[in-house]
Image 1 (cartoon, rainbow, N blue to C red):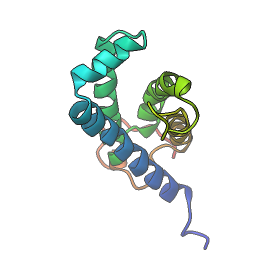
Image 2 (image 1 turned 135 degrees about the vertical axis):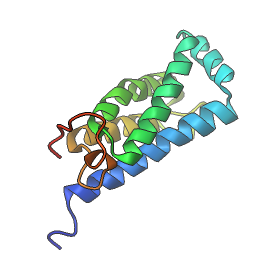
Image 3 (image 1 turned 90 degrees about the horizontal axis):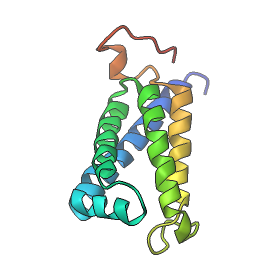
Length: 141
């Protein structure tokens, strides 16, 4: 099995999974289901500035695309960790299970852990960033 299972495949799998979830939660959940104005209202209801919702939306979309492509994955994983920990905080009062009314904190905490692991792994070998860097590439992974 040596050579088949490796950190590069792990990085690819994690990048695709986390990137797709971020896109689904931004483009579909925030923009379509709740709408951006509805998301902003939710932010206000939990004591955050409504304008922050638009920044979170944009960051999730950009990070999702970058992670899927494998373009500076460490940077984007680091950028979304505060957002994901913020989602964990926002859902903390709803209990552990994300299937609870209002969503619990287990899922956003798990996504935070995924982002932390991506931060450790980097892009991996199967990444567009390795072939088309915007500026000189410095990742070791």
